[in-house]
Picture 1 (cartoon, rainbow, N blue to C red):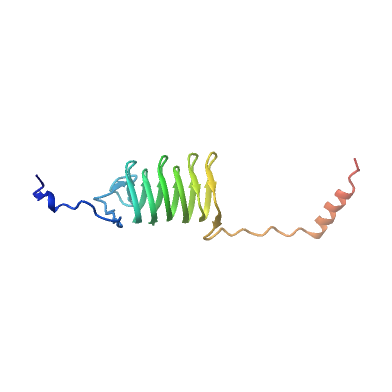
Picture 2 (cartoon, rainbow, N blue to C red):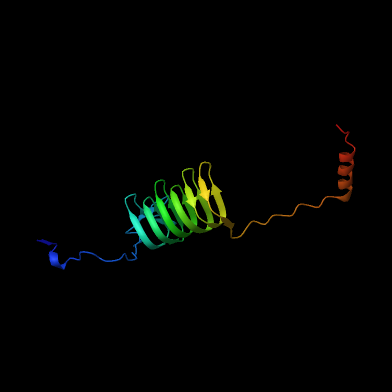
Length: 175
């Protein structure tokens, strides 16, 4: 019997060991999500469904929403969002990482990592900001990176004011 013009003998029975898969994330292959779809400033969003499993290196342009299973490496320049029920075991690099699922990873985020109420993160975080919501779970180390807002030093207290405060403290009656 043939399928699509091929004989059974011609079909490969086993492709051997797993190979890296290159995902096409062009707008035709991805879901586009924006305030005005197709409008100026629209960001591309790639989605991985609940029934999908990917093993290997992923390079994502735009945002990436994960509802399935990913193992390997994720390099993105936008927002990587791990949905509730998703499982990720990978090294993640992105601008922002949002976690509502289960993640075992070393994460580098240029802006922030946010662990939602249902999120579980085991691994190391290097980010400019880390947000851990009530109910979230985090086990690992965090290193704050990136530029930090300049904090003005507290003004030095006037020596006369220091003396007045010290005098008031010593003049209080003993209890």
